[in-house]
Image (cartoon, rainbow, N blue to C red; front, side, top):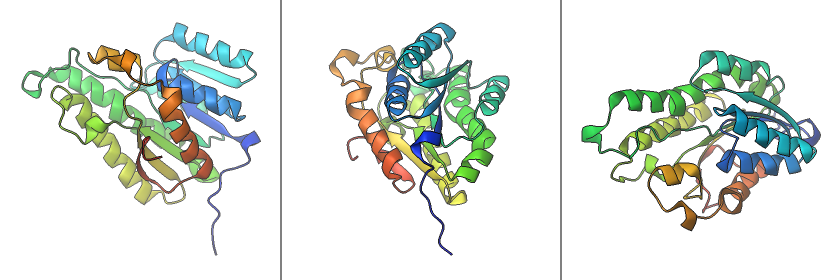
Length: 234
């Protein structure tokens, strides 16, 4: 017997987006809100998240803001409680770790442990918490990756290692959960605070809503097969 893999009707769709107070997370939240999604948003900065949620609500979106640190088990539990009937999880929250970006020979290990907690363990633990809902609704997961997961950029070893680990979690999860779409997405260089914090010329990069969001919307609306994608290829 064949099993349909289509998502529920758009009126019923609910998405949880982490790291949604600015950058790619907020840009994607705005796009999904325009498509009629109910949103649960997370970010470490409560004030920034409240402002983002207020703007979306003023535009007519149904938004629940849950501020906190994705590495905190109590915060993840709160997100899971708010996510009943979830159709889409976007693991976007991330940290560079140590800055200025250090060579691996000098990388402070406590900073790397923190980056692993935020970029790898947090997304996995949150995924574990919402899997029952995603299984029931044949939902989808977006894990936001980076070209640093594959390329040997000096100074990017710690961050890149966390994103490579997240890519592999996505690969295995897709094999273990065939009824859920699992996408690892490299959005490419974008004009974000994170890029500026890395010492790059963020002003020269395109905005997330111009490059990454259209790619993510295509993945979600067309429900492409599980796998690793780049925004450019989409």
